[in-house]
Length: 250
Image (cartoon, rainbow, N blue to C red):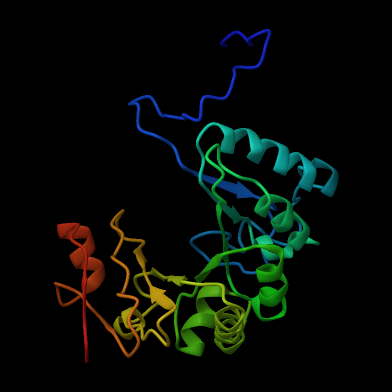
């Protein structure tokens, strides 16, 4: 175990990995709880009614999170993403957002403060989060077809409520909004890979669970855009070629 220095190391504004690459992004998990039971993330077989989540007393307080974030920002972090579990299940999250929004980089720049959510309660929280200082959101949405979406989240949650959350975020000015999607063989169909951006502030991106590839984001342009893979079946294309897909107008 490395020795702990007697005095804190002064902030230099530089934070790098072992290869000397600067680290600018920080992800902070504010809770280990989620109200979805997606099979690829928190399957019911593991996270059942008897699963013991962390007690509230074991979670970092908002003040402790802000203190740590301030240290990271002093060492060069420019973007903070709040995650979970489902971060919006953390009571009073707007207060944490407000504290983090006050932080500044060494040159006085405000942070890029964002949040990843399943969107289940986003419609209720979007306006308050924007008022607290949140800049944008990323929403996990594994299908536009209601039956597919209910099957993927495994708690029978309707897709309409998540779409309402996206609309509320758009109205509140939390943009650009990104939409993440996981394609799972045998549970989502080929049509689930098609996305239509509903406004200039909503872009879509997807990750294929059959590979480590990440598909490129749709252009943030008003109008309808359709996902079109280079291969007939996008999950095979991702796994076999690792190439990103392209976007075309229908």
